[in-house]
Length: 251
Image (cartoon, rainbow, N blue to C red; front, side):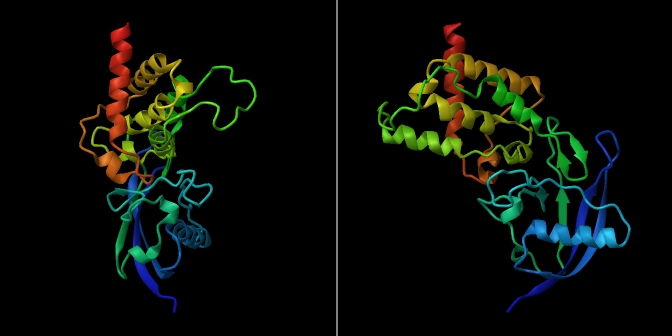
């Protein structure tokens, strides 16, 4: 039997990047506990539009936990109170009847607010462009077993590659650091033979771009890994530090 709850949603409203933001609280009734968090926001927007009010702007795309665009800070947690999921996979059964749910955008200097709950995350794209790629000419597609790779290395590389670049790590960090993201992108290539050619240049370029874009320093509190929806390991940061120090020593 479907269960419904009545809630209040305290939402951050901000007209634009330079506007002063504030919280607005809205009451919603008979929200199905089987609905997703984004479906609840859809219901809120339908209500606001019917009342001739400005709907809440929030980002989303696939709604399947793959793209990470549904980046919301919910009750003090990136992507909400559940673990190992993105916001689109969060269901209203995680909340109780009468709850007040606080919804904010990512809080990081490198992720400026575009409007309401939507932030500009192009900083991550710029870090990838700085070195998160392999530029060697590989020719045609080789056989899967043409380059022997130890299974442990392949597994670690795949685990690092599971990062979807949602920004939860920077949002969770008290310093707004992007180290876990950069570490994942460096690790997925550093562990494989194809990534060895540009390893030194990659580590230096991506760390330099991260610093240039205004992300904070890592102090190893572990909040990033704890809130990561894809469980990217903190050990990747240690690997990034090794790659970076080796590159600087070669200089």
